Length: 136
Image: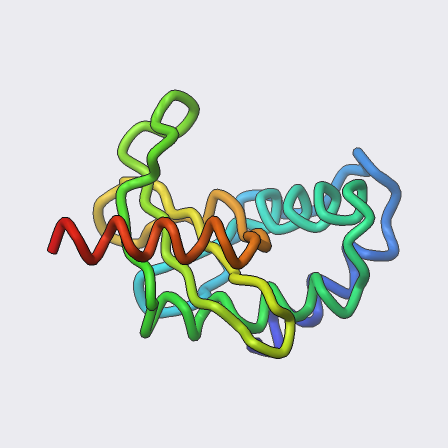
């Protein structure tokens, strides 16, 4: 995880839900082609905190995002296109967590926005991975 992400994550973890932030449209690069905005990063952190995800797991998700984007085990069109048409899922399984990390990206050309990052159950991840391999 880069220093900018760590700095903003630390800042947002201290804030109240719904609290306004400065420069919400500022771009935060995860990789050369994938970005968060400050607003979307804050929303990600608020959502995961509301779900009861620990700080260490939030940092784990953020840390693994760039690794997954560079070298995913799973790369598929999001099966649920109703909310985010054209979105893609990238993911990798992590034995130490016994879960997969999934990064959902929008369909935009050029720098793509991270819609969300989340944990997926082992069974769901490997089911998607098997379906991907059948389609290759």
